[in-house]
Structure formats: C-alpha cells, structure tokens
Length: 118
Length: 112
Image: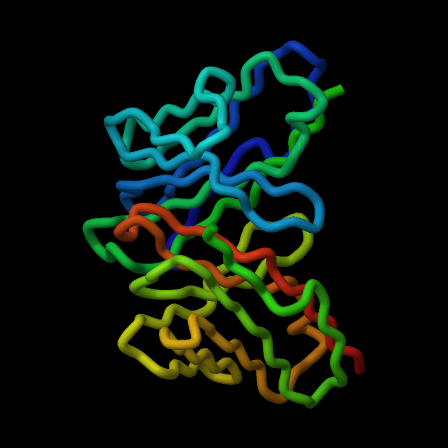
C-alpha cells in the first residue's frame, strides 16, 4: 500500500516557540492532505484540508494563523504550530490521498507526531 | 446536529468469538463509509470501505454492513484473536467527499 511519512514522531518544545511537522507521500501523489489532531482516548478531529498549490481550508474553531499549513508540492505538506502553548500538546496526524486516482478511496495516514509543549 | 457515534467506548470479548462494533450517524448523507484500525501511538490503518449502494463487504475475517435507512454500519470480526485488540474507527465522507470525519472509536480487547 501507499506510504505516508510523518516527521518528527515526537517533539518537545518550550512555550512560545514554533514547531514544524512534515508529512510526505513516498510513493504516490497526494492531491489532498488532511491534518488531524487527537487527544488521549479521543477520536481524530479534523483541523484542515489542504490541496496542492492552494490555501488550506480550516475547520471551524481552528486558528489558521496559529496552525500554518503549506502544501507546496504533491508529495509534501507541513503543519507549523506557531507560538505553541501547553494546551497545544497533542498527537497530530496527517493523511493523504490521490484524488485523481481514487476520489472516494482510503486515506493513507502518517505515523503521527506527538507534540509536548512545556 | 451532525454526529457519528460508535456504540461503546470499549468492548471486551473472548478469543474465538465474533466481535461486532456499531457506527451510527446523524444528519449526514455519506456516499461511503470506511473502517480503520488504530494501535496506541500510531496512525490509523485502513481496513474496509463500503459504498452507499452496497449492503455488505467482506475481507478475510472482517465483514462490514451499511444500512442507509437506519444510518448505521456494523463491523464484524469473526474468530477474533488477541492480535485484533485495537481501537476501531468508523469514518464517513462529508461535503461531497472533500473531507473525512471520524467517529469516536471503540477500543476492542480480545482476551485469550
């Protein structure tokens, strides 16, 4: 199956700093990437949807200036948590699909990035 | 309001039995529904997709049903094994398949 690589898997940062998480599709072109956030024992909450070359569409309640998403190429999307605070500590997961190949198909997920803000 | 609910937060069954997980949705009209498995600290892994015009889909020991009248999907694991222990998530498309929304998940434990 298709592979999505997410990096870093764990990051610890100080409050007020910014953290960048990368999501790469290794063997397919990700026309659409989704960023989710997951708190312990809770489900995945969609944060934003990004299409290659266009601005991300954010879900209600997600601050676009705080969670910067860039999808500059068909294989890479980045999520930057700006001025991170302890309440931003969470498990962030990206997923991707090739809409042109299979518009209703499965999502391929990265392994997730656990962010801890001190 | 729109909701996706999975019947129980946790389910504990004996090895060899069939595990049945439920996913109910409200105020959605999905064209398809998916099931994923998630292990602790890992990203979800796709298991099965069923479309609105399909009643049932099977894959090895897995079976999924989709009833658009009841707005419900059932996920079955037959001959369950301890290795099947994980959290199972249902997901459906929303807004013309532009995004995928997940249910709350059911944590399944299979005891030997």
